[in-house]
Length: 103
Image (cartoon, rainbow, N blue to C red; front, side):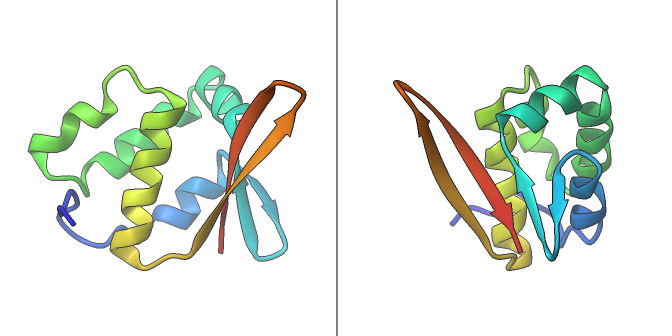
């Protein structure tokens, strides 16, 4: 697996809690929280704080951020820091959302 990060991201949970739903010992993130964080400009604060952990050649991940790009960043940080997460697809008629739960 390719290494995108320079080092372990020790601020990950603190930053993620600000833009997600926190229940008991888990953090839940889905497209609804992504949109809220983007509208409140908290998403860009999160990205700026996380950006320093990335190697410079991978800064393109942060341009024109979408939900899919953002969750890719979250998964990369989880793999690097050995953080467990689950991905759940929730269907509602013909629509679906992908929800991530971090432990």
